[in-house]
Length: 63
Image (tube, rainbow, N blue to C red):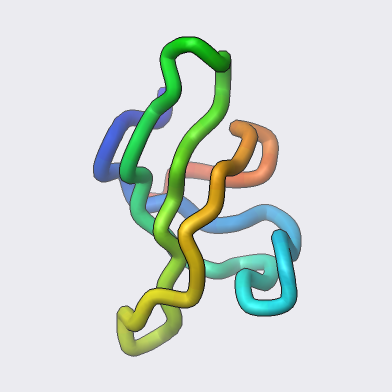
């Protein structure tokens, strides 16, 4: 189960900046929309790439 502040990884490329394997932090778990999350994705030096609304099948918890 993915919760707020969990570290996740994208399972596929989500746009031209957030590619497959990008790490991110879950900012919001939308309770009104099952398996929908707001995630801040970052690069290897932890600078923000993008903040996206994603479905649960787009990400996996890694830590």
